[in-house]
Image (cartoon, rainbow, N blue to C red):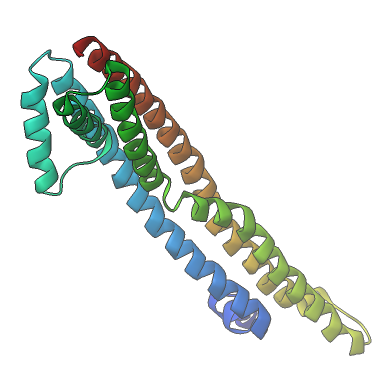
Length: 226
């Protein structure tokens, strides 16, 4: 029973050396932050996908663009404008401004609307990409941080055995076990982060392609309109 209690997880963590404990704390904080961003990005990307589907359904119904622009502008005043609707609002607003000037060529009007949509597209893509670099960093760095704690713990274990005439497994096991916990925590932080990063990066890429396709199609519509 004493041996089991000495090898319990809590005992190994509290009995670890100070550098190993610091590594564990860093990895735990990193893991909590990554999980926070994982859930945050989950809801953000789902909202962007649902908003894109909803706007595309309204846009391709073939209704009046001015009416659609009015409803989108109303949502903008309420602070609920994002994604594809935001790109449409920026492009059509610029299109109306240039068209009302009356002294510009059709190509200049369409080019101005395209530039406005591109600028909004870049901002929307930045919002979707937010916190993904952090997840990528956690996925790549956490195992090495845990490995550092493991190496340090094993090194201390063998240094402690240098003054022992005859080393036994019971003397080596606790130090190695507490050192390996750092690697386990590092993997616990890295695996969810790398899975989430790969999934969210692919989702953002698909949304970017979807936005760019809409920009091309809407540019053609504006070209025909002028």
